[in-house]
Length: 314
Image (cartoon, rainbow, N blue to C red):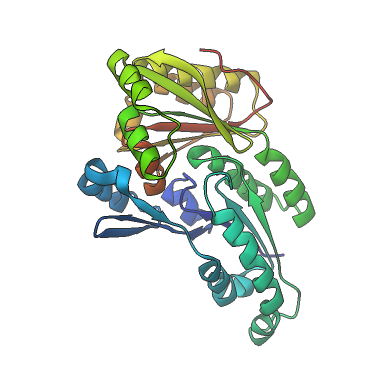
């Protein structure tokens, strides 16, 4: 059976990993003033847009996910012919309409695919499953990597569906941002006032960086640490300890809102990389999606891995 894997472009995977494993993207378009770019996970284009636009007016950006009709057309034009079953894994539905758009599109796709497949010489049925990864950015990539592993090992559709849906509820994402003022400005633009001016001013004045934890569709601070570099080092050290303890899948995904050379120079990164290597855990690093950067700002770090329930321990 030909199994396809679809993710949206907020899923922070390296471009070469996406190409190597024939992962299909649902691009998210970012508009800042008159500048518009559809995010196809092209690192150079992302960094150029970051330097020319995000730094200036990123908090005012509009992100435009694939619509119901665009998803329907993508499937009916290509995917119902190229594959027999597709897993479509989306950013958490609590933060984006992409999941609901894909779910709504799936009804039309399953009603309309038969004559298209038959014309292409395929008489077997087509099926798809929309999965809410319940997480963001690097963390949502963990479920996609597992889907690739299961497919490559020859797992059946039922086994993949069961394991991926179970895994999505056990992925932990962590994020540290550099600029609380940016987060507040972005939140105000979107109508989210969860970061007050006082909190932003106090945090910036004291150089306090919150560590945000994404888990099962919810995002909340789990620690406040003085200094960005210090906070990142403690996060990477914590992730190293979880790797040593034993993860549910052998992968850690990391994304950074800027050039990857900057990520690799951050304190604690080399230790995490070495720990992953010693434990046979794949470390995937990528430039953060445009969607991620316009929502959390330049220079943010996100990390994701599948693990049992735990408490963040700096």
